View 1 (cartoon, rainbow, N blue to C red):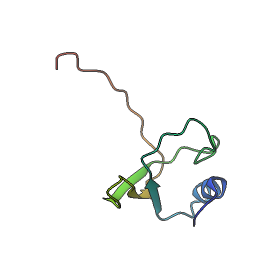
View 2: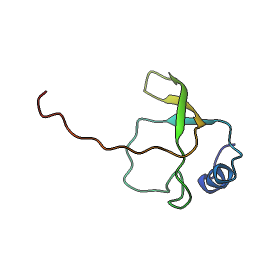
View 3: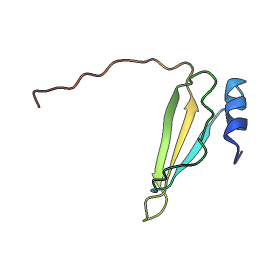
Amino acid sequence: MHGSGALVRWLLDSDLVDEINLFTYPVVVGQGTRLFPDTGPDIALELVGSQAVTPSGVTIQVYHPAGPPQYGTATPDMNT
């Protein structure tokens, strides 16, 4: 399914997504529409594959939904 982040969020919330193929383009934009709406439950994603597609840096990441995420804390190692 290509396109609507709102539709993807609804499908994720309804547990109807088996796989997400995310194309990443090496461009930074300062504005625009979010990929996913800022509402809805958090969902962990398991990376199951990735590949560089073009010499310019376009990549594809393949994810499977992995249930609720587990959050941790990070502390900097000041001895390195």
